Length: 309
Ligand code: GLU
Image 1 (tube, protein in one colour):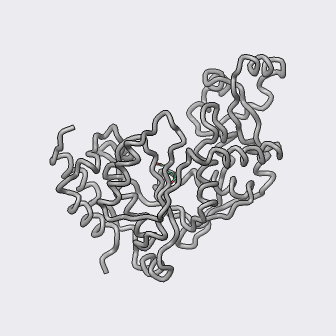
Image 2: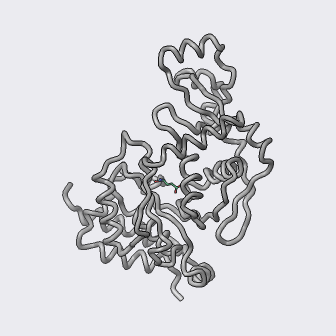
Image 3: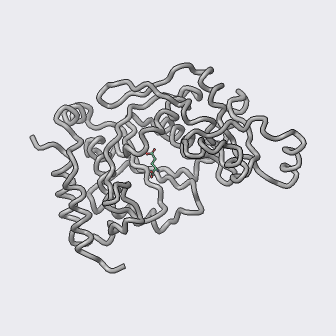
């Protein structure tokens, strides 16, 4: 794709309009800690754009610009959409932004056994159950008003044991759903702590019986991230506001699995003109196309993210 300075200029101006996220208080706290152990976890399903640069730079600030506190995790669970070319390019993009990370990056695709073990633990406690329904059957299963809702249905007991056996014999693999009401009964009330110390009461019930184990891929996003964050001793989960609601599910899973709870810092996400999170469909220029403007981008990120004091 040809390098289009007009689009680049526009993309850079999106960052310039954002309020600084690193306040004086937060900055002092980061310096005091010599950076928080945190992570940047891109999914390598495309090239990084300005929105990713912004997110990575927030993580870099929370880590106190300390490479020993910045973990790079490659969220490549969905192997059908991930590619090595994106992984190589994203590493080089981060380097061009002068971001560096701990010697070893982690790959979700190499941790499938860990995810399976956790699923087994949950299954042994009868907190998850197999669901053999097809996508079509699930949507029939939901009454029309709830199709719009985020809540996943409870499908336990939806099929007779004869029908389940028939599907198993046809080689159909089940998805694994969390029994939400049982899980909540098991752990009681849950909440998560923000970096400014405020505790947020979580409301996982509204998500219903979410899928934790996928038919095609061992684990889904929610399960893999809580295990990864715990196993890599992440102190602060730094990520976009678009993932804030998932935190209600994550703190529930941490309690169920006996994992430590990190602190959370959700940063604003860059929006396109349509008010939606910047993504491929906005045709924002990829970072690797920003040859001459990378310096400008770095300056803008530093100037706009960190409060001037
Ligand atoms: N891999 C996720 C993404 O690219 C981020 C995961 C997380 O921060 O929890 O949106």
